[in-house]
Each structure stands twice: as structure tokens, then as C-alpha cells.
Length: 120
Image 1 (tube, rainbow, N blue to C red):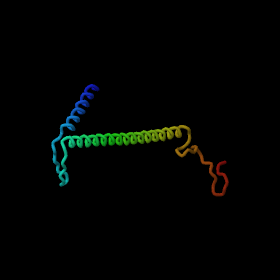
Image 2: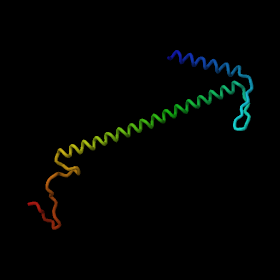
Image 3: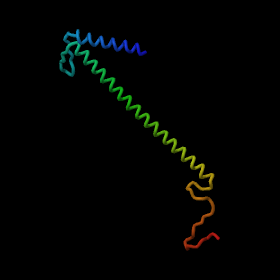
Image 4: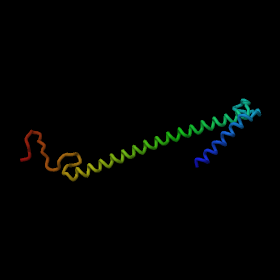
């Protein structure tokens, strides 16, 4: 794989050198109603620059998408852990004799409006 990639890179380098050195023909492009004249080598270099910008943009897009994916995964994991902790604490409170609000089950020890204790 590495050898094939190096061969392709070498061919691209040779093609670039040939295009810049031997691309002496004048080419005319019409761009948004304006005529643009450049040599064949200039057109090749312009294409290489556009390709490099495209590859760089796709690379940045990939990084951004990966970052967003990781953040969404982290949020899902945190929500799952928080949901698991809530259900585990509800199971624990039901088994230790306290209600869902954390108070002990059983008869109330509150006082009535007159301030006397009804429990005797």
C-alpha cells in the first residue's frame, strides 16, 4: 500500500513538472461573462490549488462531524448514567424503608394546629 501511494505521488510530481514546464499554450476561459486567458501550466496549477482547497475543506468537515458525533455520544452516555443512577437510588430507597421523598415510612409525627402531639 505504501509503495503504491509513493508511486502515485511520484507520478503526480512528474506530471506537475511537465505541465508547468511544457504548458506554453494560451487558453481562454469565460468566467461569469469575463474572458480569462492563461497558459496550460497556469490552468493546471489553478486546478491543483482548487483540489488542495477541496481536500482541506473536506478534512475540516470530517473533523467537525467527528467532534459533534463524540459530543452527542458523551451526552447520551451521561444521560444513560444519570437515568441508571436515578433508578438505582429509587430501588435502594424502596428497600431501606424510606419513601420516594426520602422520609421514613410509617405514622406521622407531625403536630396538629394547636401544637399538641396527637400520637400518644
